Image 1 (cartoon, chains in turn blue, green):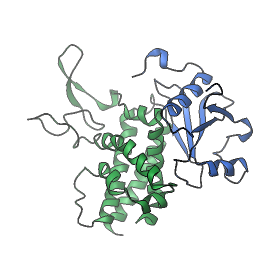
Image 2: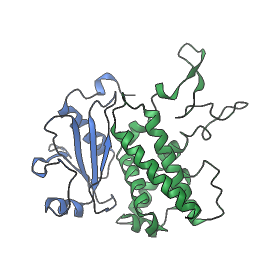
Image 3: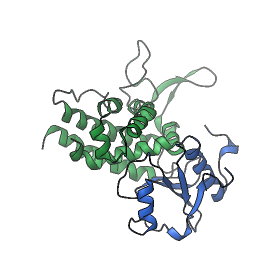
Image 4: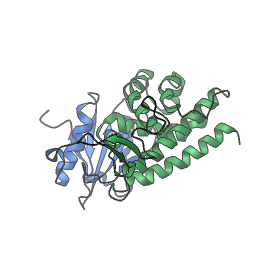
Length: 111
Length: 178
């Protein structure tokens, strides 16, 4: 169980925390992009890696708020080829996700 | 409809309900209900697959989903589900294998049982069980009031999200796999 210090308190902390949980144990080629929710309630990540299966869709894994992660979250796994298609507008992101707002959050710029 | 097709149909429905429950906040829908649907969907999906591979498979057992990492560790399955290489797919199955077992053990009829005690006498998502509290006294616990660490693992680990994608993919592409 997470200690109080591990529980993200702000939206920015929640984005960093979820990206770190997924990035720290992943394959080296993993890249994670965050798509900020203007209301600051849903953490939205697209994770890109060659080890993921190619599905031809951007399917979100949705989770509600919990005591340990008090933000809703949606995570999409895609391959590099699917990510290229998303950037080219050939593969759709989930509704309300704005491609123009994406921000790379893993690996950290300093890493 | 054949027997495995009926199991698949029910697995698809259970999985849809799991997704609906998962999206809700845990204050609204306790973990046990979300995990109950995940456990039921994956058990029926596994039974559909095992019956399809071997019509003599006994679907009355609750031990099914934990067999999937072994039974479906095949290059043709990897390709049909979308994995780029068999090595990547095999690596996922090996890494996520403990999660397959943990999800299966959410069923009260599976998992560790103390000698001399019946089924359901352990942490599970359906029925109350007896356990010792912090003071060492025996007390009864209700699943709805308990935290299970599997949702935490599904959210916090990359392999947890991949497991969700694997189940989703197998449900979608079942007819192409078999």
